[in-house]
Amino acid sequence: MMSNQSNEQLAQLGLTSTSGKRKALKWGIILALLLLAGGSGVYYFGRGQNQVNIVFKTDAAIQGDLAVTVSATGSIEPTDEVEVSSELSGIITDVYVDYNDQVIKGQVLARLNTSTLEADVLVKKASLKSAQASLQQARAEAREAKAQYEHYLQVWELSGGKVPSKQDLNAYEIDWEVAQAAQLSADASVEVARANLESAQSDLSKAEIVSPIDGVVLAKDVEPGQTVASSYSAPTLFLLARDLSSMELHVDIDEADIGLIKLGQQATFTVDAYSGRSFTGQISQIRLASTEDSDTSVVSYETILTVPNPERLLLPSMTAVTDIAVESATDTLTIANAALRYQPVFGPAPGGSVSPPDKARSGNFLSNLLDGGRRGPGGRGPGGPPGENFRQNTNTTTMNGSLEGASTTVWVLRDNHPVPVHIETGISDGLRTQVISGDLQVGDLVITDSTQVQS
Image 1 (cartoon, one colour):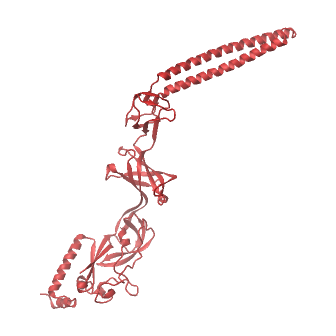
Image 2 (image 1 turned 90 degrees about the vertical axis):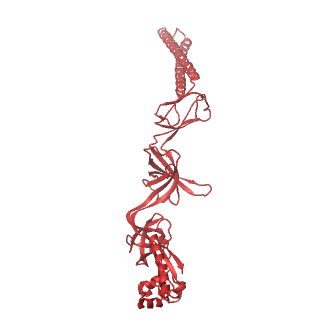
Image 3 (image 1 turned 30 degrees about the horizontal axis):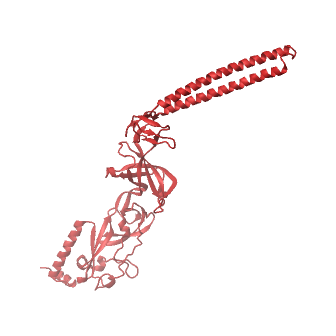
């Protein structure tokens, strides 16, 4: 049997003992389920069959690290790629490497047929020898012409200009000058022949296609017997990359975010090949040239990240989704962003004060539990559910990636009552926001949502 005092209390609430038991049992079950779900609180408004139950969803303020990131998608590329071509036309006779082979600088990768080139070298050698012989002959003729001129000049001087005649002496002098010119021409012919020989020998050496770097063969587009024609453009036969233990990640950063990107910033990224595993990189270059998407007109800037790859897991052209850390805070107080967006269903009472029901105004705990304090229309008297004045009383700021330096109000559930708390926010990662100042402690249950249930 319930005591008379209890019966009187139930009667004041408009309940009989039997109905009181049923309702107490009903809400006891509801409360037990909410407690099992965790992170929720219950508050009530109204009377009788028009009772309104408000279920609060909360999230605890926690201490931890926070990072603001810029996300972008890009591709993994080698630090240096080299296309190896043939400067000569001809038939490939041998290919010495295949895909994924490690090569060193100067290593022969393939060879052209050299028979024509070797013959050309022989011809050029013969031409050089012929030119050298002609030079020897020209030198001899020049010496002879000089000696003859000097002899007749001496005779002419001894004879007092009588023998030989002046005309003959001039002719000997001209012969010497012609011989000197012939010698110079022969010298030039030798140089030309030597250059032709060097060119032919160079072509012969180019028949061996060699690696210009230490690296690995990424691609091969040549087979023995294939004809290479380089008349207009040099065909690419091999694609080489330097050591893949260090790679680059190329990403396009939107113009709206490029101002946040700085050299040396750290980043993490994932690739589809290794789900659940993240890799690290560091920004090494921000390219000034912009690109514009022809469909969306979005302007972006290519940014390069240096990526260590000691296990050789990352391969060229892999697609990567990266998060670049542009701001961070360690061991700081944070709350869920949903708390900043929360709009409570209670609000300022007349006169501007916040009036969520409290113990002093809504009776004892049993009254609050059973009928939510019996607030009247508009929350000001008996007889009805909350009115229009039960609305938001905060200056909540809409999340847009960062709320740094913003002042706002959040609602905290204290003693099962929502309490407004003014805070100043810092950086945000899109899920949680840093709390710089305000009457908020680790573990405080910050309201993130609420639901009204009519009974």
